[in-house]
Length: 401
Ligand SMILES: Cc1cc2nc3c(=O)[nH]c(=O)nc-3n(C[C@H](O)[C@H](O)[C@H](O)COP(=O)(O)OP(=O)(O)OC[C@H]3O[C@@H](n4cnc5c(N)ncnc54)[C@H](O)[C@@H]3O)c2cc1C
Image (cartoon, rainbow, N blue to C red; front, side, top):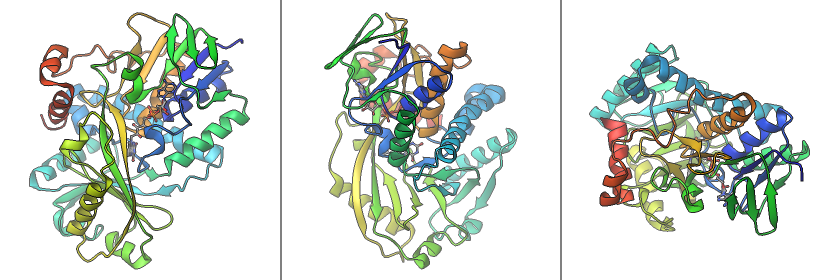
């Protein structure tokens, strides 16, 4: 078989990578262990915003204005790419154009919100700051301490998006093999149960599964979050939550809560807790989180009467500093890993980057997202502390110090 690239993984990163390569005329095959969207990409709350785990103010502090802006533009390219695909392929994925609203849970959280607002203004991005009293005009809760709002963001059903992008790629002639796990890679050959493919490049868009494939065991871990969806709300109930129009909301806690309204008027609510966030195994304790998510919304909107329909858990890949991990395999330069995306737009942008690495030798973020970059807690201390503790501490450092 004459194929130049194998992409492993049919999530947002893998699909975007295959799409970019195919558009440039490069023969590409995508293999996916289960089905496209079976990983994190198909389980999300569908917030399409550049702001996922790491805020612009953190980037500004760590990298200075030039680099921070370059990184933000990189993730914004992921937002744009998803929007363009929805238009180009007429993807029916419940797109909901909603501003982003980052809300403070307490007064110290409001200090972070103000920093985010200042960072956005400094780097030339639209931003509105709400003090507590003003916020109540756009969000019907008296329980937050302020917020920053910005436009050009939207919500989607990311499972439908992945499935539709898969269909569009298959229709365009990209071979996509679902139910086909990469069992091992030797040199330039990918082995699966059904056969092997020898190629020039292998791009592993495996996110949190990369350590299962034997690589980046210290550099990539996962966090767990839970999502619940209510039964449909009335227009009046929604108006009470969002008196000035619907928005995608998340708060300032380390393990944060988030919510938005879907096209069929359901409230999608997400959150977790410290114990479960860093647990090694996926938990199905959905009853516990149904209570937690309900309590959160009741606490913020006491008058809202609602019923949770379904709750599900999900895991996403993360690095210790919440920026992605990408780079070549230590012993096999044919392999390029893409992981720890911590966000759909990030994953989309990283997939394109990996493709353009082959196409045009792209390299401007190689060092920033390298697995060999410096982390606050290094591999030796990680062994002593254990991986869950290391990641919890590292994320506290990345967000608050
Ligand atoms: C509950 C939840 C809510 C989230 N909400 C949001 C949100 O609102 N907004 C946002 O931007 N981000 C959100 N995220 C994060 C986002 O989903 C991820 O960062 C992103 O989807 C990662 O995409 P990916 O393609 O890198 O990984 P994945 O989607 O996980 O894709 C990796 C793929 O690799 C496949 N695979 C694994 N091993 C093999 C193998 N050996 N061979 C072949 N294939 C293999 C897997 O089956 C999987 O399909 C959320 C995540 C979760 C879990």
